[in-house]
Amino acid sequence: MFGISEIAIILIVVILIFGAKKLPELARSMGKSARILKSEAKAMKSDQTPSTAGNASSSEATAPRIIRAAPGDVASPRPTTPPGNEAPRP
Image (cartoon, rainbow, N blue to C red; front, side, top):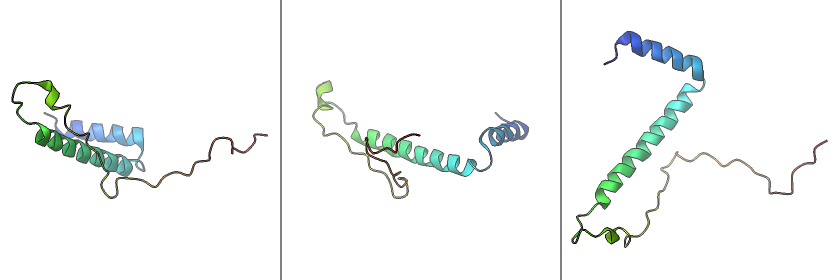
């Protein structure tokens, strides 16, 4: 579908737009997103069961799923100040 020259042009444009310093972070976040998407698709396939009466209420009886981050997926939290404790502006 794409030749080597088209892929090279696309890569050059991406480097110009995002910059070389942002590319590793961009690739890392895309990998995390792909991993989450893959696990969710796998979970949805395993959750699907044939309905006995063709009734949609069988999905309502299941407990809600909890999505947990894999180790390394969560960045350290940013420090926040509670409302009302901001420094006054000059």
